[in-house]
Image (cartoon, rainbow over all chains, first blue to last red; front, side, top):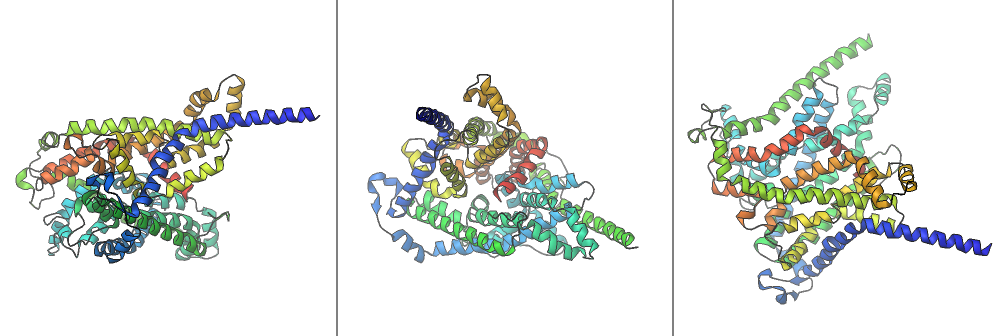
Length: 309
Length: 281
């Protein structure tokens, strides 16, 4: 009996060993990548954030400075400015984009004719390479650009949108509307998951479409809203190419987005330590906001199966 | 009575939403139309207020091709793109297969780490990675933009594939195993073919990601002879500030492959985006 048990046990360990061997063999590329491209750089980045290092002079000149980089943040006017610009962008653009993309998704969901063609048209701009759409809108926002020519018809003389510190940030926000197709598609798939029976039942009970929308549709798609808002916060903090190519952060730093400031610090001023500190602060901010959205979600997100994230 | 009234109401609602959608579609398409008409304008008409050019100057396109050094940039882009496609597809499939079919030690822990890396903003690792590649002498070569793809091909792709593979019944593997096929053969002959839809989606998204990538080439490629199309286009903008017709022609040329891909594979792309929200959210 006993012998039999140990034989079984050793059989099991052999089987487990086989699982280990093959399992690790297959996931090995990722584990190696995790160490080389994520974990080691993360540790390196943490070390850098408490050091001062000018990349031009090489590794020998790296110097431990403690929390100086983080202290410098509190007195750095550009850091403050970049936070203000990014938050302002978030506060205006996120509600604006969500309402527009949800609105389009609702219209598309009404089973109108040519629904597929419309979906294609509205989605089209969001697959266009960022650099291409950036070029197109630089031209549109120019002093003689499309926008000002359209305004001229109404007798309004528009500014050179991107050269004016009062309008540059808003120009970027308007440009972003063109690319809401991605968010719209996600809302559309959320809306298609709302059961028609539920809406019909509400209608039979005498609810008009506004009541149905706010009492049934919105709660049912609240996980989708939640997802889109979290993604929008994250992408606002990573906003880069448009500001880099169109305005270079100007005029008068009115479009100095956080990620653009980070890039300038690292690759224009070569202050790698300070840039690493900026990256960690960005990580912390994104984490805090994501957690805030997740925490608050228990008040307004409704999960059908009651299985929360 | 009520149903008749409802019918009329929903009819009105449909007409109104149709009109709104049409207006929106016009607004969405105008910038693209403007881009095309701008690309066809002769120099003398760049600042004229007419929407469509009086003379169509098709020669702007070959002129843009030669002044942007298009074929060199295209070659540079493809040198990065093709290995990225191969590396991403194969390594993410390998890793996903390991996660979905073998109960190795600490699997749960590794998988949680995989999910956690999806939340990590790239900016944290961007600077040290740059410094490491610089130490290796890889800066100003395409290598930093190629090699990482062979190490798992991105956490999200692995996750997507693992979910899909977990949905394939294990009976298939067992049957193949009884026939004497080892795990490698099962992966190659069974799993890869069965995962074709997801692999196609991953290929499309990788293609778009690499083609559109701006940050990577901006950081790693200094020499204008090594630029990719996206970075080359922005470089071109700096050189030809007021030649909007040529700039727009070049922009259209850079957009065309993505547009073709989109019209060929739109179902995959749209489904892929819906799925990504479903699995993440």
